[in-house]
Length: 115
Length: 111
Image (cartoon, rainbow over all chains, first blue to last red; front, side, top):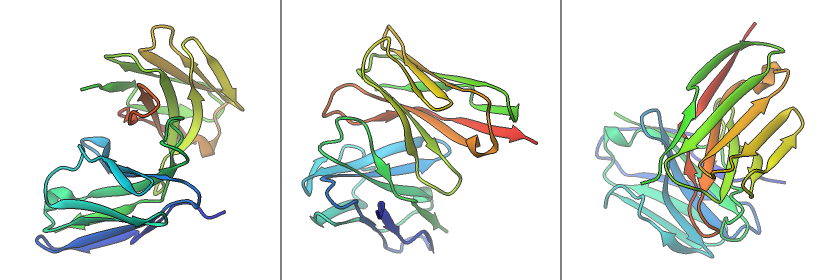
């Protein structure tokens, strides 16, 4: 069975450019989570969706970040304009239900470097 | 906000040794979980604990949900090379609450 699929795996861009990260959750899962991982701050939840509806976006750092989930099989995380401090590994995860068992299935991550 | 502190931050052990790590919180959780992250991969769930005092095993892994609900422990017996990685604890207050992840314990096996 396919797991959570993220793209791109790696992206290097220059400050000020727009970055779009993509995620395909596991089929049948109805909750989707975007996390950011850095050495300094560890794993931080940015936003999560349930049934394609954003439930909690309190972790989105600022207006430069936006996330959408137009349907059950696709989500995007966009950063515009990007800044060097946005450099991190961004993970998408999905779960069945509202994630109330705590079992999240993570993708392999998108490593973003902003120069 | 809630914080989860893991210790030790890193461990260097020899193959075959047992490993112990723990996670403490400033507030209670009703669910404790342990995830492992291999290099270049996303975290994978190892063990989930849903009841205070619960002791659960998964092969060579054993985890316990502290009776105070503010801590959890993970033990790995007879470590093998594939145990290398970063181990994260995570806590969840309620069914609809988001997970709070710990700071991680990096395990390295010395040849």
